[in-house]
Amino acid sequence: VQLVESGGGSVQPGGSLRLSCSVSGFTVSLYAMTWVRQAPGKGEIPERISVINRDGSTVYADSVKGRFAVSRDSAANTLFLEMNNLLPEDTAKYYCARSQGTYWLSDGAVIGTEGEDSWGQGIQVTVST
Image 1 (spheres, rainbow, N blue to C red):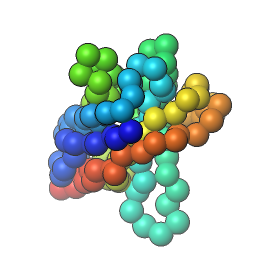
Image 2 (cartoon, rainbow, N blue to C red):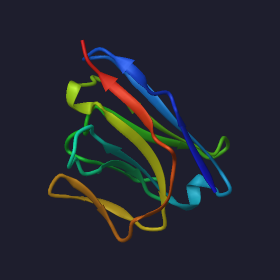
Image 3 (cartoon, one colour):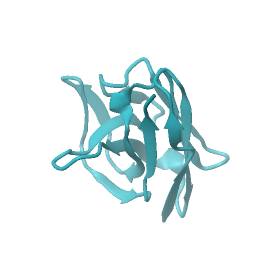
Image 4 (cartoon, one colour):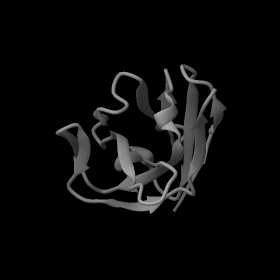
């Protein structure tokens, strides 16, 4: 099982980036696929920002709703995260991950029946002037 993120980088506020997560060893459509970010700084806890469930339904944390869009390409076995209107507070390391659970939105946060079991190495996104 391998997950490899790409597409990160530096962008000005208001800009856009598209992250990709190329996977091998399993089929993306048979799992829930999540995007989790961890902002810099001691004590920052990871934030699960977006999920595409096995049935294709998508869930977004309030922090990114309306700006980010998750999708998957089953033929290419790849997960995507389209990020628009980026803000400085979106600066973080972004991880794609696999889960056997199902996710939904609760009080603005994305929660699920179980956690992720495989992770990519992460990719940096920096939003600054």
